[in-house]
Length: 116
Length: 108
View 1 (cartoon, rainbow over the protein chains, first blue to last red):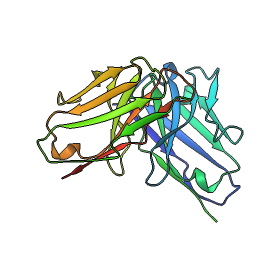
View 2 (cartoon, rainbow over the protein chains, first blue to last red):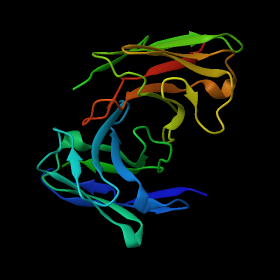
View 3 (spheres, chains in turn red, purple):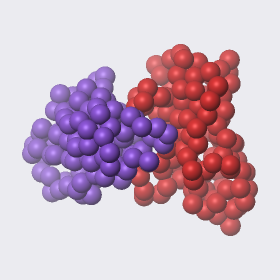
């Protein structure tokens, strides 16, 4: 069955860095664009970034552009989100999801906490 | 950026009753509109895409309608497992992909 498993979350100080990973199985990962979507505690869903199926183009939300970088390794069925210069407002659960415009495959999320 | 506005913020409904949730887009998104259900501690679950097509395995009591800027999600007879937060999302004009702020359906 389809699985997306995120990892790499944790507690980091403001200004710090983290890299999230999302390992895919059960579907043809290399044929889908992939998103990162986040959710601050008690808040709604916020799109963060998308990478095309072949990694040829990336899009980032204004709130993270210049600080976050989405990437992928298709032979490893893995999606990444490199995050630097983290801020307290980056705290939340980060989900990876496939892209059909909408998303029907979601991971369970990994929690990132930015706090001093 | 297209802004998605959902109403109401909270909907109190008794089990077995109908629930009607609204989503408005700041400009036309054609039929490129999805609805998701999210329960506490869980990832979002796709319910509807293309404004009115149920996703795989979604019960028939969930239906979507609308096009352009006005959309509705209807749950015909609420079951206990339907109490959750519901989000709409547009995918017509991107980036960014944008979500509504959510409607919480709670037990009356």
